[in-house]
Image (tube, rainbow, N blue to C red; front, side, top):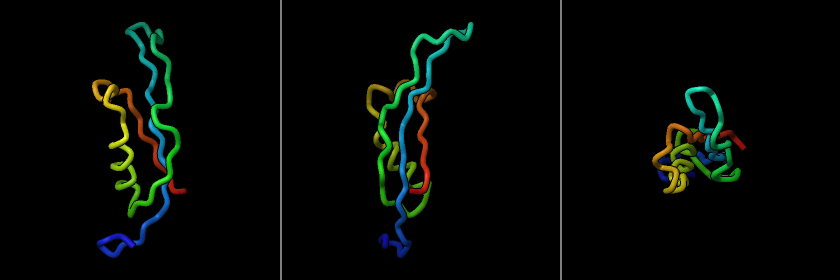
Length: 74
């Protein structure tokens, strides 16, 4: 149980860097997985997303519009 009395559940998350496209739709930087699927204990999907967001590499902080965090119950 979490400190607030909620039951912790297993979630899985991954972080993906989406492809970079120019105005013409040409892809200059392909998509890649920044963080492989990782399992965490969290009290809600929102908390799991916050935990995942902390794992975004520093070098990608300037490209957050291209970063996708995906979370699912385990």
